[in-house]
Length: 222
Image 1 (tube, rainbow, N blue to C red):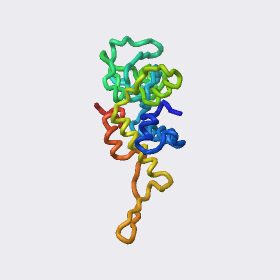
Image 2 (tube, helix red, strand yellow):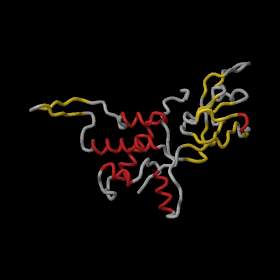
Image 3 (cartoon, rainbow, N blue to C red):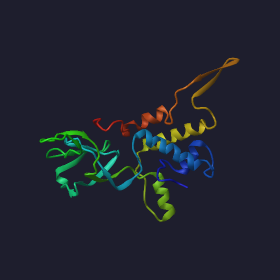
Image 4 (tube, rainbow, N blue to C red):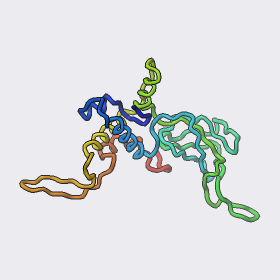
């Protein structure tokens, strides 16, 4: 059964691994590889619509969503009042960065006590709520739509490098099954050499392909 997280199809994964599409382990491997890649990207990458997220503010002009690959901002509310869309814009879809055109967002967090309180430490008070769409429609979401309605015409808009990165990750996961991933052994002449290896779930080549969509830090400029 497909998952909405899946970055590739059963047929493409089977062809890459040279196994039958009926392979019992294949669906779980696809989802595991896709989730590993999404974790490396730093955000849920499958299409999600009308997500509501409360956002902390340090009182500056910028808000940072936890999501990446933000498609559009549906609304921003502050203390229950909707902010006119003309007053802000999505400055960086990749980093979920929203810029206030006219000034600063209100500070949310802890204030000093006294006659003239001052902002002390920002944290999420729930005062600022952003509703948005983010991610891409994955091959997994398309497969699920076809199961629900065989006449569905939905297509995936996941960038091709991300699907290829998922297939590379999938291949690495399967090739390492049953072995200690931190140990490498090589035959040399009549003997063998074994050493510890620093392996990550997402291989270096997959990381290189996916890097343009990587969200390393909320403050990084795109």
